[in-house]
Image (tube, rainbow, N blue to C red):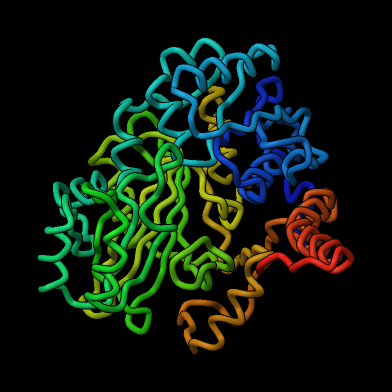
Length: 422
């Protein structure tokens, strides 16, 4: 369970340079942040994190020096967030490597890297690029420019555009929010949404306003598709210093959400495609790419380009002990990133979402042909023998809504009132 404290001779990390997990929004059960804290903390790097409160799983990790409780509301302007980051930097007292865990943080850091350079270490990147690749429309345009396959996509500007699309499109289709993060406005849809019929699309679109903030995309049926993952770290010349490929076995919600279970599977063709695209656009830093292989035409189609570490990044580690977060820290502190092959067959499981995902996938009958019968090892997202408190905290936070509901029900019955709605 989890990973041992040290699998091999330690990497030559600069243990005088801390790492800071940067996250905005309200998603306290984020296993990626816990993974980053453990990945660097196990090797002696002082770790800090911005958290929603003091009782998140990340804040409970034994490898965290300090949690900075900062419950952002979504109404803060960039200048407020930057000042808050600089204030955290002053409390740490020495330059730290910034590790964003969401698009908003990654975009903010890139667009204000000159200011943040005073207190932090960040990859140097075109300030506009992270926002563009995180945007569904911006990514689609870049794919078209450089000949990278992507699903057929429409960008409606009005309800009339949606009516025209509905009259000619092949259903089902997929609706996604056009921008990567929409905390400051109400999102049109909650994540990737599969829409079965033109009538269902038109009914849903009536609530999207005069300028729909969505894209409409062809649906790649799971019966003829495979979900793949690419994680990498690229230097200032867009050269990969670490590059990994894997296959997604299950996600939650099913077929459209966060990775619940995945395997490391070598795929040189996919690695080459990803490296070529990153080189074309000139990106530097950590990338997390989602692609779907369409067996109908034999092409990998790029769905998402996340300009930050993926929550499941600990799936991937080279035989030299490098993952993308370690590569980031090594490179930004002037250390060599050792070469090494990815550990084939390794499995990653997110305990709290894989069980419902497993049940859903069994009902649908879907399996991936690439999952090995036996894994070379399993990395659990939450449970680790050397750091058990994040797992316990995760369970407590998951249970709290249910406990509150039972308490409210008990009080209502004692008072002879009506039970709260489920």
